[in-house]
Image (cartoon, rainbow, N blue to C red; front, side, top):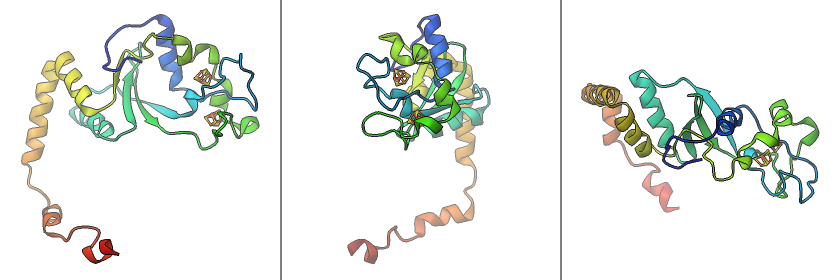
Length: 185
Ligand code: SF4
Ligand code: SF4
């Protein structure tokens, strides 16, 4: 993967980026040191879900929402597919790096081919674009889609000027949470 989402990469990279989002890893109850998955388990540490390529203003806004959460990133593969990726360790990944439910693991894990995973890329980027936080995305957005970016800023500004619902306005008047007495205990 390339950190700031610069373009580049091989056809293998394109295939891999797509497949990364369609699978979970093959593991084994025991791996020999010469097994391609030995000491890796990289693909058991996240899930990636395909999303619509953003075109509408609220879709750009969703991307920002995803990206203000640590551990969530967005990537675009070499076929133009957009994905949201959550860093999350599979609960069945054992400390040894083995799959704890090897015999009953999901089909997506079973069918994933370690010959075509990101480990095979070496130094090649796995993604066409990668955004690990909202600033990275906004800077890409401004650079790559300047007209849409301007419309987005106007859209945001219109929404910020909207009258706040009464209930939300009251939040500022409410006591801090947790209540002071509880916090002292
Ligand atoms: S080598 Fe590839 S398939 Fe094997 S564990 Fe690592 S990322 Fe997963
Ligand atoms: S079920 Fe097993 S192979 Fe699938 S992600 Fe979890 S640890 Fe990896």
